[in-house]
Image (cartoon, rainbow, N blue to C red; front, side, top):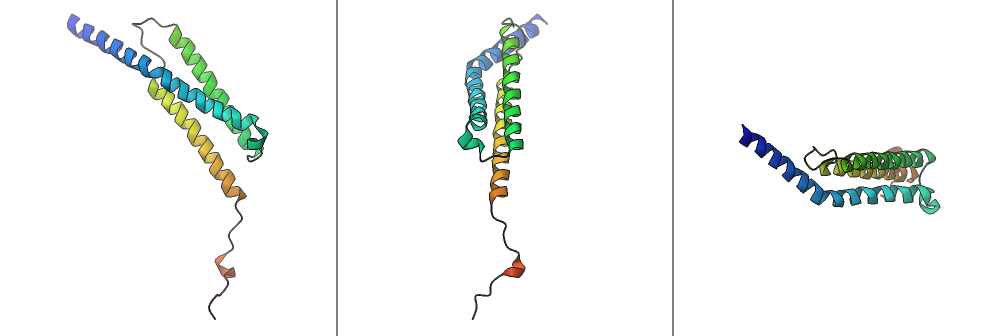
Length: 129
């Protein structure tokens, strides 16, 4: 039984070390995405291409992600080496991906709304003589 507990403890330490090794890269990627959202919101040249509602949505998503990351980093910093981590690379990747897909979706909607409407097929011009 002691051997099984020791293996569990070693597996936890190995996972924690692996997470710690890759965590800084994932945190940097999330901060970069949050910074990108901040640039969209604060830059008049970029923001003019988005509706007010979409700017608000981007701003809220960036703020929520930043708040989540700050709180998780604070919790993680208070843990001992043998404690179960609260901040995982998978969670960071998911947050980054969610922000990415939100911006991509909004950009697609904005592009579609700015595209001229296609004429109906009834109004086609007959090019044959």
